Length: 282
Image 1 (cartoon, one colour):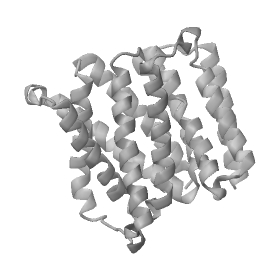
Image 2: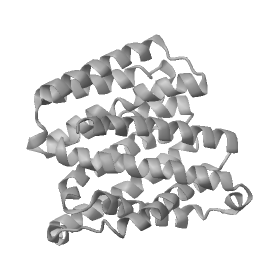
Image 3: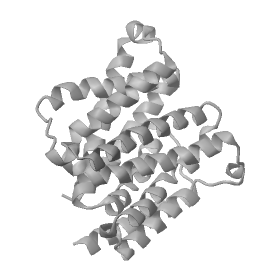
């Protein structure tokens, strides 16, 4: 089932492309869209969790409850910082910093879990992560201010959330775990942004597209949690690093963008690292 994380990487790319097209053509305020997106995820998961409410007894141990609260707190903090920085940071400055998340995730997983310390796989994952960041890095990205620092912190907190999730995800059905996470993010963002829903009433296509994107993210996260349980954080993160590869391919066909030479070289390096990891894992 090693192909599942690869499918997840493809879904990440598709979801990102659809969100970019939606925000670009419909000019939706990103704060409102944050609430729309998480509300859509919660609504999609509601009928699903009716059948998948599996929670094992261990989930209610004090230690695991505290870890769950940490996951929720990190998720909220990461998303708030993510959108705070998005207010001021240009996308060309924002994206390379955000790509640090896989590297943060791998390093934290190696520190937190002995089972993740397959040093050959770790080395391949770090090489792939660094090549991904370098391929998007330009001189003007090096400016440091409170907004770019927020992007770094957001990436770090997302990584902490994902690594902490590994410790308790085995006690939950992945869909139910993701539902709880998204519900709290929706609640928090709703209280902070106080969004207007008038645009959804005026243009139903926006609501339909938001639900489609939400469905993609539901499957995507379920695959991540499955991968963490079966393959571990490092291997799963390495396989998901393929997402930018798919993103570049989709961007060429649907957004008519041209990849740079550095991006092409990075893609070759990432594919080689992923292929080596798959071979070594089998």
